[in-house]
Length: 243
Image (cartoon, rainbow, N blue to C red; front, side):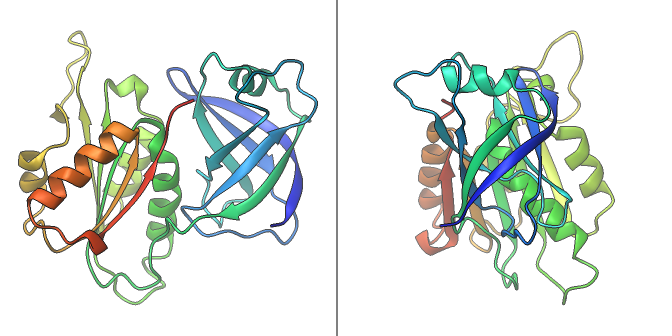
């Protein structure tokens, strides 16, 4: 697998405790929306038993001029060093990897169920699909269920909401399990469950499901979909451990 030395151009807080990192895209580099890569710190000032490398999904789309990843900033040595990098710093990237991607022709409706920082590959796939929906043959619709505790925890929420409003083929359902009572949340509340899916999807057995986010969310959604009779071949999944 090819290796690249990336230069950080900028970083940005995209939710409470979550940062996005933007890198110069190497000449000729390409990837599929939804794929990931291994990112390695170069001679970090601190390390721990987790090591100096992590896998991140690309949050940027293949068409965007920069590569972008986003992550929760935890107390691990890797995350602390990453959060303190300044523009001009370099990392080593190896990839891309993975087949958590949309098919070129969507013969079934697609439903994403994601939570927390699991939204990163969803951002890439959703915005890429919206960008190309006018230039492709008619595609089946996309519905995204995006779960967080509070709106301020939801990375890219405003951007994805606006993109879906302006698209005739996509629908975003954001749900909060612990919305701040001081700021009324107008959307869905609680965890994604069978009742919530039924409010927004007519036939639960029809779509392809893409599940990603914390392992507990992915496991719960797999069990729920299996219980309502969704075929295992219609479920794709990827877990984000949140290290």
